[in-house]
Image 1 (cartoon, rainbow, N blue to C red):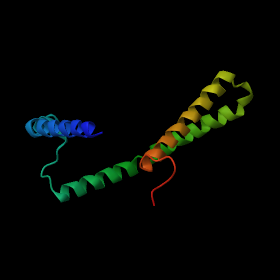
Image 2 (cartoon, rainbow, N blue to C red):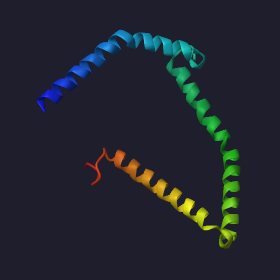
Image 3 (cartoon, rainbow, N blue to C red):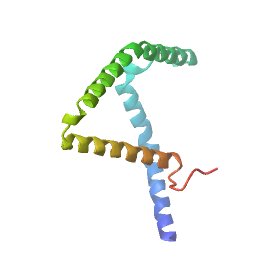
Image 4 (cartoon, rainbow, N blue to C red):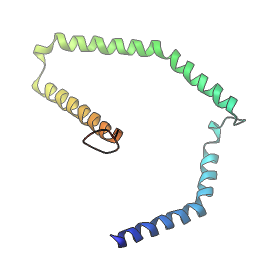
Length: 122
């Protein structure tokens, strides 16, 4: 156990040294590559304006999202009407998809609880 702890400490020390040497170069390179996304001046007011733009842009997209939802609901109604003609393969795929969604939900719950299966830490 102690040897693993020493190994972990040495790896952490190596990572810290690497970041102290190369971190600034990586930061400058990343900022240079993405300079078209940087808003000048980088102030609180600029961030506030951008957050308002994002909010109202999302708000403006609601009508198109509503139309897409209505199309999906209409397709679901058609599938429900023709359910007697549905093949076993299609039902199996739908069941597996539902099972996969449930599994991802359970995984998210476990991650949200801090990787405990039994319950939340209160």
